[in-house]
Length: 437
Image (cartoon, rainbow, N blue to C red):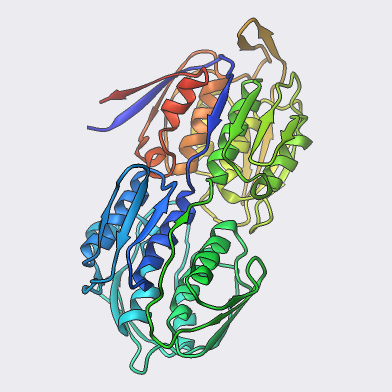
């Protein structure tokens, strides 16, 4: 049985929403526990299916985890298996992140090709090429990556031809236990990469250049690290999604437990769209606005505009007073949500990697409701299907703006990356119900 959501749109949001820990930070840091000789306690771990699947992968490899109170304790000190099989790897693309730490720790591993969202090619050839430079021998055989490091991984100079978040994270972990110094040029600078570096550094490994495109990691020559307990950074994509929810419903909303610095690209675009954002040290407030202005966006690596926020801003652009454009430069299939947004009555044209959205403005406030009165292309409730995590959230945003009932199917995608999104939205005034098919 698969759950689906029914959303009754046209209602304003209010109050406060708290942001959970970052799924995209959690996954590499769970993988990094493979490098540790001791149990590590991670607080602010989000309860989402991708994280739970990755913890099961650690268990499959011979580690264990437990969840006392509001944290997760992970112990890989007695890890003994080095094969990540397809039954778990198929559900989560980030499972490729065990390749670097397993190979670095054991000198050999076998990892199935990963699954995950169908948003386009995310080739792992950059991971493999970098590991080969570090002395790995890698073969691809019957859907598995078989890797050995006959003399242990060696420190090396790695230059990524293209910025890769997963590749940077994999090589950081591989370099942690390597023999000698590894330099990564053209490294990803995302906050999730920064936290991985900080956790490894706080475990006694010398890392230079954190937060820049050049990282220098001094390996431990095979010695497992003493990983310290840590707290996950908040989920900047979840925060951005709630910010768009407030904007598309013409609502005032406070968003707490965030790091505003991680959201500057999103905040900047919202302000361009005439949405006032009041920033504080660990929170921000989205102010209601009667007029949303069109915007021009192109996705880029951090600190640029995140591809994971592109679908949500496309939904928001349908309410703008004019024509917006979105140029998707990260993933070639990241417009799968467009077909579903068209079912709402959105006016969107695609030309290769560029989407043009003709907005329909004029949300008229009526007491506690935001009634959409723009003509002739205002959004109407529909039945739609999610294709990936962020597409699912964009459909919810569109549904919040459509003053009829919308049914959203395949919301298991939503559960992969958002902790209790439907519950949190209900608490701030949205009318949506989760139903078992």
